[in-house]
Image (cartoon, one colour):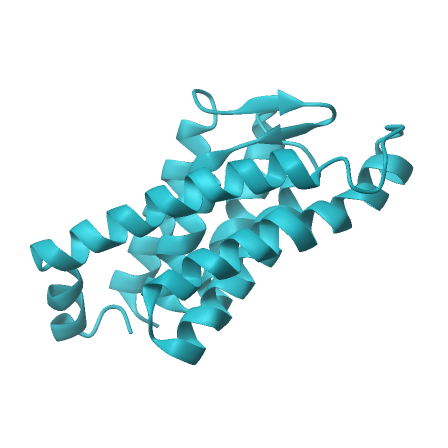
Length: 168
């Protein structure tokens, strides 16, 4: 088990949970949260899909427990994190993590959110209702995550982690 990797993942979860009190926008029964998408992109390029999904799940779980999230956070964040990680691993190019996050959350996560909203939360919404807010949130957050990753890479933080064997 890699302590540096676990610690970095825990810091991303903490960032997601703490910032949810500040940057969370209610739309219907959902709460769009661009910070989650930035975290998904960072986790995807730092750790790959498995850890990215765990970070997304734990952030969603804690946000729900603390009342700053909704059940719709699970499919949106986890599908986006997974695709961001898969796209990045397949190409080793960070812009593909951004694309995976937007497709995963903005389209697939929004479509999976519909039955949860309708049948578990009792919301009367159209099938495509969540696509626009999820897509806008994921675009904004994914671009922020991409920029942060670029700054980390340029500053040498990513190189340092590679050299230390902490992150893939």
